[in-house]
Image 1 (tube, rainbow, N blue to C red):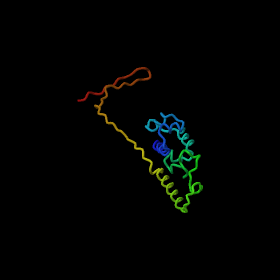
Image 2: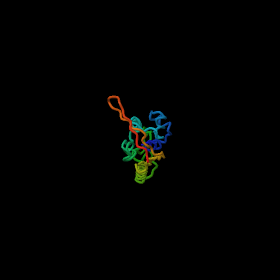
Image 3: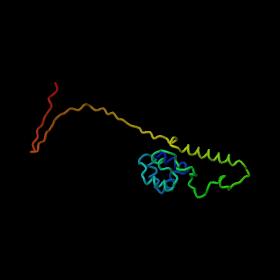
Image 4: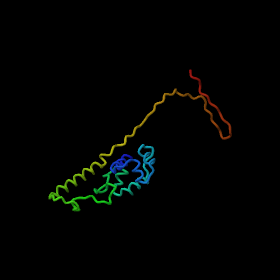
Length: 160
């Protein structure tokens, strides 16, 4: 999940410090997530969802689906609409609006494919096994304690 949070941070073009400030979490918390000391909590996921409402929580938490739940503009500045052919804000006198719309669809599709689960780096888990050479141990004494506060000691027979 930390790699997907990094992907969100990169897609928003923010540094680690500014992303932490944007989410209203401490930079140390974000740093410890990225270094692997701690795992992201539900409050971190909620902070991301509150600030970026169109983020796909299934993708964020489990890596399934696309990064965003819709194909709208994914930048933070959602208050200003993206000028496009449909709005008619810019008219340069070209009559090939179908080509422009097709180019926009291609760019949107490419952005969604780049943010898909297939492009999420896998987390590698390294298993470390230690073999320690120790001399073989031998039983020296066995004590049996009884409920009447007495005990018996048993010693193994000496090796021949």
